[in-house]
Image (cartoon, rainbow, N blue to C red; front, side, top):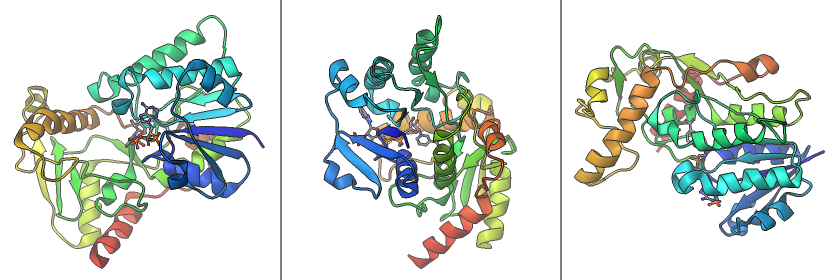
Length: 316
Ligand SMILES: NC(=O)c1ccc[n+]([C@@H]2O[C@H](COP(=O)([O-])OP(=O)(O)OC[C@H]3O[C@@H](n4cnc5c(N)ncnc54)[C@H](OP(=O)(O)O)[C@@H]3O)[C@@H](O)[C@H]2O)c1
Protein backbone atom coordinates (compact mmCIF):
# COMPACT_ATOMS: atom_id res chain seq x y z
CA UNK A 1 0.00 0.00 0.00
CA UNK A 2 1.27 3.48 -0.88
CA UNK A 3 -0.15 6.95 -0.30
CA UNK A 4 -1.64 8.59 -3.39
CA UNK A 5 -2.43 12.30 -3.13
CA UNK A 6 -4.93 13.57 -5.67
CA UNK A 7 -5.14 17.32 -6.12
CA UNK A 8 -8.26 18.78 -7.72
CA UNK A 9 -9.80 15.32 -8.02
CA UNK A 10 -13.20 16.54 -6.85
CA UNK A 11 -13.62 18.19 -10.27
CA UNK A 12 -14.77 16.85 -13.61
CA UNK A 13 -11.98 14.57 -14.83
CA UNK A 14 -10.37 13.47 -11.57
CA UNK A 15 -13.56 12.30 -9.90
CA UNK A 16 -13.76 8.92 -11.70
CA UNK A 17 -10.14 8.21 -10.82
CA UNK A 18 -10.61 9.12 -7.15
CA UNK A 19 -13.72 6.91 -6.99
CA UNK A 20 -11.92 3.96 -8.65
CA UNK A 21 -8.87 4.17 -6.37
CA UNK A 22 -11.10 4.55 -3.32
CA UNK A 23 -13.27 1.57 -4.34
CA UNK A 24 -10.24 -0.66 -4.97
CA UNK A 25 -8.98 0.04 -1.44
CA UNK A 26 -5.43 -1.01 -2.30
CA UNK A 27 -3.87 2.34 -1.48
CA UNK A 28 -4.29 5.19 0.95
CA UNK A 29 -6.04 7.85 -1.13
CA UNK A 30 -5.92 11.48 -0.03
CA UNK A 31 -8.02 14.00 -1.96
CA UNK A 32 -7.20 17.70 -1.72
CA UNK A 33 -9.87 20.30 -2.28
CA UNK A 34 -10.00 24.02 -1.57
CA UNK A 35 -13.74 23.63 -0.90
CA UNK A 36 -15.60 22.16 2.06
CA UNK A 37 -14.36 18.53 2.34
CA UNK A 38 -17.71 17.38 3.73
CA UNK A 39 -19.18 18.01 0.26
CA UNK A 40 -16.68 15.60 -1.30
CA UNK A 41 -16.88 12.45 0.77
CA UNK A 42 -16.01 9.44 -1.39
CA UNK A 43 -15.80 5.85 -0.09
CA UNK A 44 -12.22 4.75 0.62
CA UNK A 45 -10.90 8.30 0.27
CA UNK A 46 -9.74 10.80 2.89
CA UNK A 47 -10.71 14.30 1.74
CA UNK A 48 -8.85 17.25 3.21
CA UNK A 49 -9.13 20.97 2.66
CA UNK A 50 -5.98 22.56 1.25
CA UNK A 51 -6.01 26.21 0.28
CA UNK A 52 -2.60 27.37 1.52
CA UNK A 53 -0.24 26.74 -1.39
CA UNK A 54 2.87 28.03 0.39
CA UNK A 55 5.92 25.80 -0.13
CA UNK A 56 6.26 24.93 3.57
CA UNK A 57 2.63 23.89 3.90
CA UNK A 58 2.65 21.78 0.73
CA UNK A 59 5.91 20.02 1.69
CA UNK A 60 4.50 19.19 5.11
CA UNK A 61 1.29 17.81 3.60
CA UNK A 62 3.11 15.77 0.96
CA UNK A 63 5.52 14.01 3.30
CA UNK A 64 4.91 10.26 3.01
CA UNK A 65 3.18 10.54 -0.38
CA UNK A 66 4.36 8.09 -3.05
CA UNK A 67 2.34 9.36 -6.05
CA UNK A 68 0.72 12.70 -6.81
CA UNK A 69 -2.01 13.04 -9.45
CA UNK A 70 -2.87 16.64 -10.39
CA UNK A 71 -6.15 17.76 -11.95
CA UNK A 72 -5.81 21.53 -11.96
CA UNK A 73 -7.76 23.22 -14.64
CA UNK A 74 -5.18 25.51 -16.28
CA UNK A 75 -7.90 28.11 -16.85
CA UNK A 76 -8.44 28.51 -13.12
CA UNK A 77 -4.77 28.33 -12.13
CA UNK A 78 -3.27 31.44 -13.75
CA UNK A 79 0.30 30.87 -14.88
CA UNK A 80 -0.09 27.35 -13.44
CA UNK A 81 1.31 28.87 -10.25
CA UNK A 82 -0.33 26.46 -7.82
CA UNK A 83 0.55 23.47 -9.96
CA UNK A 84 4.19 24.57 -10.17
CA UNK A 85 4.21 25.06 -6.38
CA UNK A 86 2.83 21.53 -5.99
CA UNK A 87 5.58 20.09 -8.19
CA UNK A 88 8.36 21.88 -6.29
CA UNK A 89 6.90 20.75 -2.98
CA UNK A 90 6.63 17.17 -4.27
CA UNK A 91 10.34 17.19 -5.09
CA UNK A 92 11.22 18.64 -1.67
CA UNK A 93 9.01 16.10 0.12
CA UNK A 94 10.60 13.15 -1.70
CA UNK A 95 7.48 12.13 -3.66
CA UNK A 96 8.37 9.31 -6.07
CA UNK A 97 6.01 10.00 -8.98
CA UNK A 98 3.82 12.75 -10.28
CA UNK A 99 1.30 12.99 -13.09
CA UNK A 100 0.79 16.67 -13.93
CA UNK A 101 -2.59 17.90 -15.07
CA UNK A 102 -2.39 16.80 -18.69
CA UNK A 103 -5.27 14.31 -19.21
CA UNK A 104 -5.49 15.43 -22.83
CA UNK A 105 -3.92 14.74 -26.23
CA UNK A 106 -0.52 15.17 -27.84
CA UNK A 107 1.72 17.73 -26.14
CA UNK A 108 3.52 20.60 -27.84
CA UNK A 109 1.16 20.22 -30.76
CA UNK A 110 1.10 23.92 -31.61
CA UNK A 111 -2.55 24.04 -30.56
CA UNK A 112 -3.40 27.15 -28.56
CA UNK A 113 -5.81 25.38 -26.20
CA UNK A 114 -3.01 23.17 -24.89
CA UNK A 115 -0.33 25.89 -24.81
CA UNK A 116 -1.36 26.76 -21.24
CA UNK A 117 -0.09 23.34 -20.12
CA UNK A 118 3.40 23.81 -21.54
CA UNK A 119 5.03 25.78 -18.65
CA UNK A 120 4.37 22.76 -16.43
CA UNK A 121 6.09 20.39 -18.87
CA UNK A 122 8.99 22.85 -19.27
CA UNK A 123 9.37 23.01 -15.50
CA UNK A 124 9.41 19.22 -15.06
CA UNK A 125 11.94 18.83 -17.86
CA UNK A 126 14.13 21.53 -16.34
CA UNK A 127 14.00 19.92 -12.87
CA UNK A 128 15.27 16.58 -14.22
CA UNK A 129 17.78 18.12 -16.67
CA UNK A 130 20.98 17.21 -14.85
CA UNK A 131 19.75 14.53 -12.47
CA UNK A 132 16.35 12.84 -12.10
CA UNK A 133 14.78 14.42 -9.02
CA UNK A 134 11.25 13.11 -9.61
CA UNK A 135 9.64 10.54 -11.86
CA UNK A 136 6.82 11.96 -13.98
CA UNK A 137 4.55 10.80 -16.72
CA UNK A 138 1.43 11.84 -18.56
CA UNK A 139 -1.96 10.27 -19.02
CA UNK A 140 -3.20 11.22 -22.49
CA UNK A 141 -6.64 9.78 -23.24
CA UNK A 142 -7.29 12.01 -26.27
CA UNK A 143 -10.81 13.41 -25.84
CA UNK A 144 -12.97 12.12 -23.04
CA UNK A 145 -15.76 10.04 -24.55
CA UNK A 146 -18.20 11.27 -21.89
CA UNK A 147 -18.64 14.42 -24.02
CA UNK A 148 -20.30 12.39 -26.78
CA UNK A 149 -23.04 11.49 -24.25
CA UNK A 150 -24.03 15.15 -23.71
CA UNK A 151 -26.45 16.09 -22.13
CA UNK A 152 -26.66 12.77 -20.27
CA UNK A 153 -23.10 11.67 -19.43
CA UNK A 154 -22.62 8.47 -17.42
CA UNK A 155 -21.55 10.37 -14.28
CA UNK A 156 -23.37 13.31 -12.73
CA UNK A 157 -19.97 14.72 -11.71
CA UNK A 158 -18.81 15.13 -15.30
CA UNK A 159 -20.63 18.09 -16.76
CA UNK A 160 -20.46 18.09 -20.54
CA UNK A 161 -21.13 20.34 -23.51
CA UNK A 162 -21.68 19.34 -27.14
CA UNK A 163 -18.09 18.98 -28.32
CA UNK A 164 -18.85 19.46 -32.02
CA UNK A 165 -21.39 16.63 -31.73
CA UNK A 166 -24.95 16.81 -30.43
CA UNK A 167 -26.61 13.44 -29.99
CA UNK A 168 -29.88 14.87 -28.71
CA UNK A 169 -30.41 17.23 -31.64
CA UNK A 170 -28.82 14.98 -34.30
CA UNK A 171 -26.14 17.37 -35.55
CA UNK A 172 -22.38 17.66 -35.78
CA UNK A 173 -19.70 20.03 -37.03
CA UNK A 174 -16.71 18.53 -38.87
CA UNK A 175 -13.66 19.91 -40.63
CA UNK A 176 -13.65 18.94 -44.31
CA UNK A 177 -15.22 15.47 -44.40
CA UNK A 178 -14.59 14.70 -40.71
CA UNK A 179 -12.36 11.72 -41.40
CA UNK A 180 -9.28 12.82 -39.37
CA UNK A 181 -8.44 10.21 -36.74
CA UNK A 182 -9.40 11.08 -33.19
CA UNK A 183 -9.09 9.06 -29.97
CA UNK A 184 -11.96 9.08 -27.48
CA UNK A 185 -11.59 7.36 -24.09
CA UNK A 186 -14.29 7.04 -21.42
CA UNK A 187 -13.28 8.63 -18.10
CA UNK A 188 -14.18 5.33 -16.39
CA UNK A 189 -11.54 3.60 -18.54
CA UNK A 190 -8.96 6.29 -17.79
CA UNK A 191 -9.60 5.48 -14.11
CA UNK A 192 -8.94 1.76 -14.68
CA UNK A 193 -5.62 2.57 -16.36
CA UNK A 194 -4.50 5.03 -13.68
CA UNK A 195 -5.35 2.57 -10.90
CA UNK A 196 -3.12 -0.03 -12.58
CA UNK A 197 -0.42 2.55 -13.27
CA UNK A 198 -0.02 3.22 -9.54
CA UNK A 199 1.31 -0.35 -9.18
CA UNK A 200 3.29 -0.33 -12.45
CA UNK A 201 6.80 -1.48 -11.52
CA UNK A 202 8.66 0.30 -14.35
CA UNK A 203 9.26 4.04 -14.42
CA UNK A 204 6.42 6.04 -15.97
CA UNK A 205 7.30 7.59 -19.32
CA UNK A 206 6.45 11.11 -20.39
CA UNK A 207 4.34 9.89 -23.30
CA UNK A 208 1.31 8.09 -21.91
CA UNK A 209 -1.40 7.68 -24.54
CA UNK A 210 -4.56 5.74 -23.68
CA UNK A 211 -6.67 4.65 -26.63
CA UNK A 212 -10.28 3.86 -25.82
CA UNK A 213 -11.57 4.04 -29.39
CA UNK A 214 -9.63 5.47 -32.34
CA UNK A 215 -12.30 6.76 -34.66
CA UNK A 216 -13.32 9.93 -36.57
CA UNK A 217 -16.25 12.35 -36.34
CA UNK A 218 -17.48 10.95 -39.68
CA UNK A 219 -17.65 7.46 -38.15
CA UNK A 220 -19.20 8.76 -34.90
CA UNK A 221 -22.06 10.29 -36.90
CA UNK A 222 -22.59 6.96 -38.70
CA UNK A 223 -22.68 5.13 -35.36
CA UNK A 224 -25.08 7.73 -33.91
CA UNK A 225 -27.42 7.35 -36.90
CA UNK A 226 -27.46 3.58 -36.34
CA UNK A 227 -28.07 3.97 -32.58
CA UNK A 228 -30.81 6.62 -32.82
CA UNK A 229 -32.36 5.72 -36.18
CA UNK A 230 -32.21 9.43 -37.04
CA UNK A 231 -30.45 11.25 -39.85
CA UNK A 232 -27.79 13.73 -38.59
CA UNK A 233 -27.19 17.17 -40.07
CA UNK A 234 -23.46 17.62 -40.58
CA UNK A 235 -21.96 21.09 -41.04
CA UNK A 236 -18.59 20.98 -42.78
CA UNK A 237 -16.00 23.68 -42.11
CA UNK A 238 -12.90 24.59 -44.10
CA UNK A 239 -9.55 24.75 -42.25
CA UNK A 240 -8.66 28.02 -44.01
CA UNK A 241 -11.86 29.66 -42.66
CA UNK A 242 -11.14 28.44 -39.14
CA UNK A 243 -7.58 29.79 -39.35
CA UNK A 244 -9.08 33.20 -40.20
CA UNK A 245 -11.36 33.00 -37.15
CA UNK A 246 -14.51 32.30 -39.19
CA UNK A 247 -16.81 29.56 -37.95
CA UNK A 248 -19.15 29.16 -40.93
CA UNK A 249 -21.79 26.92 -39.42
CA UNK A 250 -25.37 27.81 -38.53
CA UNK A 251 -24.87 25.80 -35.34
CA UNK A 252 -22.08 27.02 -33.03
CA UNK A 253 -21.54 24.49 -30.24
CA UNK A 254 -21.28 26.41 -26.97
CA UNK A 255 -20.11 25.25 -23.54
CA UNK A 256 -23.13 26.87 -21.87
CA UNK A 257 -26.63 27.89 -22.97
CA UNK A 258 -27.86 31.48 -23.47
CA UNK A 259 -24.48 33.20 -23.78
CA UNK A 260 -24.38 36.80 -24.98
CA UNK A 261 -23.52 37.65 -28.58
CA UNK A 262 -20.15 39.09 -27.46
CA UNK A 263 -19.26 35.96 -25.46
CA UNK A 264 -20.20 33.80 -28.43
CA UNK A 265 -18.01 35.89 -30.76
CA UNK A 266 -15.05 36.56 -28.44
CA UNK A 267 -14.89 33.39 -26.39
CA UNK A 268 -16.96 30.53 -27.79
CA UNK A 269 -15.97 30.83 -31.45
CA UNK A 270 -12.19 30.94 -30.77
CA UNK A 271 -12.58 28.11 -28.20
CA UNK A 272 -14.59 25.79 -30.43
CA UNK A 273 -12.57 26.68 -33.55
CA UNK A 274 -9.44 25.68 -31.61
CA UNK A 275 -10.96 22.30 -30.87
CA UNK A 276 -12.12 21.80 -34.46
CA UNK A 277 -8.68 22.64 -35.88
CA UNK A 278 -6.89 20.66 -33.17
CA UNK A 279 -8.92 17.55 -33.88
CA UNK A 280 -8.42 18.02 -37.63
CA UNK A 281 -4.64 18.27 -37.12
CA UNK A 282 -4.53 15.12 -34.96
CA UNK A 283 -4.03 16.61 -31.50
CA UNK A 284 -6.21 13.86 -30.02
CA UNK A 285 -4.73 11.02 -32.07
CA UNK A 286 -2.54 9.58 -29.32
CA UNK A 287 -0.56 6.33 -29.39
CA UNK A 288 -1.65 3.35 -27.23
CA UNK A 289 1.24 3.51 -24.75
CA UNK A 290 -0.70 2.44 -21.63
CA UNK A 291 -2.83 -0.03 -23.66
CA UNK A 292 0.35 -1.93 -24.49
CA UNK A 293 1.35 -2.09 -20.82
CA UNK A 294 -2.02 -3.47 -19.68
CA UNK A 295 -3.31 -5.42 -22.69
CA UNK A 296 -6.11 -7.08 -20.68
CA UNK A 297 -8.02 -3.82 -20.05
CA UNK A 298 -11.15 -3.63 -22.21
CA UNK A 299 -12.24 -0.18 -23.36
CA UNK A 300 -15.66 1.22 -23.96
CA UNK A 301 -16.40 1.90 -27.65
CA UNK A 302 -18.35 4.85 -29.03
CA UNK A 303 -21.40 2.70 -29.83
CA UNK A 304 -21.76 1.59 -26.21
CA UNK A 305 -21.37 5.17 -24.93
CA UNK A 306 -23.98 6.47 -27.39
CA UNK A 307 -26.45 3.64 -26.66
CA UNK A 308 -26.29 4.41 -22.93
CA UNK A 309 -26.66 8.15 -23.53
CA UNK A 310 -29.55 7.70 -25.98
CA UNK A 311 -31.42 5.54 -23.46
CA UNK A 312 -30.91 8.18 -20.75
CA UNK A 313 -32.01 11.00 -23.09
CA UNK A 314 -35.20 9.12 -23.99
CA UNK A 315 -35.95 8.30 -20.34
CA UNK A 316 -35.86 11.99 -19.31
N1 LIG B 1 -9.25 15.16 -22.57
C1 LIG B 1 -10.36 15.83 -22.35
O1 LIG B 1 -11.36 15.67 -23.09
C2 LIG B 1 -10.45 16.75 -21.18
C3 LIG B 1 -11.68 17.30 -20.83
C4 LIG B 1 -11.74 18.14 -19.73
C5 LIG B 1 -10.58 18.43 -19.01
N2 LIG B 1 -9.39 17.88 -19.40
C6 LIG B 1 -8.17 18.15 -18.62
O2 LIG B 1 -8.29 17.53 -17.34
C7 LIG B 1 -7.71 18.34 -16.33
C8 LIG B 1 -8.76 18.63 -15.25
O3 LIG B 1 -9.83 19.30 -15.85
P1 LIG B 1 -11.27 19.36 -15.16
O4 LIG B 1 -12.22 19.71 -16.25
O5 LIG B 1 -11.48 18.17 -14.33
O6 LIG B 1 -11.07 20.63 -14.26
P2 LIG B 1 -12.08 21.26 -13.22
O7 LIG B 1 -13.18 20.33 -12.86
O8 LIG B 1 -12.44 22.61 -13.74
O9 LIG B 1 -11.06 21.49 -12.04
C9 LIG B 1 -10.45 20.42 -11.36
C10 LIG B 1 -10.13 20.86 -9.96
O10 LIG B 1 -8.92 21.58 -9.95
C11 LIG B 1 -8.85 22.31 -8.77
N3 LIG B 1 -8.29 23.62 -9.07
C12 LIG B 1 -8.60 24.44 -10.08
N4 LIG B 1 -7.86 25.56 -10.02
C13 LIG B 1 -7.08 25.44 -8.94
C14 LIG B 1 -6.10 26.27 -8.34
N5 LIG B 1 -5.78 27.46 -8.86
N6 LIG B 1 -5.52 25.83 -7.21
C15 LIG B 1 -5.82 24.64 -6.68
N7 LIG B 1 -6.73 23.81 -7.19
C16 LIG B 1 -7.35 24.22 -8.31
C17 LIG B 1 -10.29 22.46 -8.27
O11 LIG B 1 -10.44 21.71 -7.10
P3 LIG B 1 -11.15 22.29 -5.79
O12 LIG B 1 -12.08 23.40 -6.23
O13 LIG B 1 -11.86 21.08 -5.30
O14 LIG B 1 -10.05 22.78 -4.96
C18 LIG B 1 -11.11 21.81 -9.36
O15 LIG B 1 -12.23 21.09 -8.92
C19 LIG B 1 -7.20 19.60 -17.04
O16 LIG B 1 -5.84 19.42 -17.30
C20 LIG B 1 -7.97 19.63 -18.34
O17 LIG B 1 -7.26 20.25 -19.38
C21 LIG B 1 -9.32 17.04 -20.44
